[in-house]
Image 1 (cartoon, helix red, strand yellow):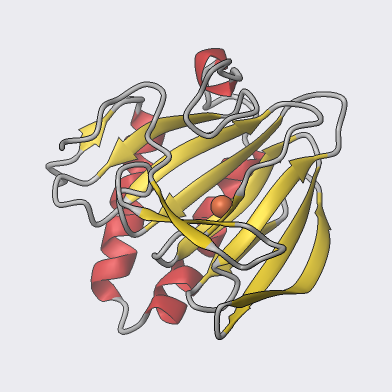
Image 2 (image 1 turned 180 degrees about the vertical axis):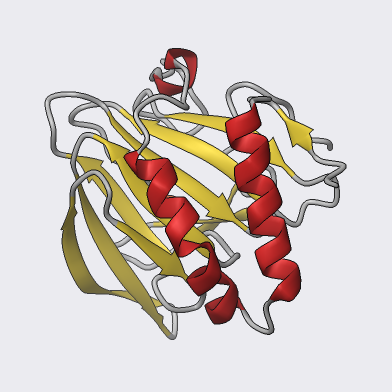
Length: 197
Ligand SMILES: [Fe+2]
């Protein structure tokens, strides 16, 4: 049983989260947990029905800028897990940012280019560029792949689904200037719920 907050409270989301929490509890490492969660995460990305339109909407004046909407769907009561949809409007890009937690990230709608950076003693090095289509997903296990930005390349808004082992919208993480490597405290927030101070 989860004492978490189901913002999107449906049997589909409850069953997914229950499976995830059981997999994490039964796993000895993040790698093992991500492997166990992969099939149900792939199912979620393949299922066109479970995410209501209101969580697929961009948000003018959002905390992320560029009309980007970060919609919380579920979070654990102890801040150990969050599930959210990130809507990046056509032509918009996120800032370069980190996540500070492991989990799974995948594309649900639209297409994105992703740039992955490595922190080399304070300088950022672009280490990978990848083009993502719906259904693509990866296990994010910091520090590997933790610093990135995504740009929507489709005419429609892109929507990615994030399952991460922190309360990602509310923790203080970092945004980076990719040229100088300068990093600043960054808290994205969620558009539909508040963060405790
Ligand atoms: Fe991200």
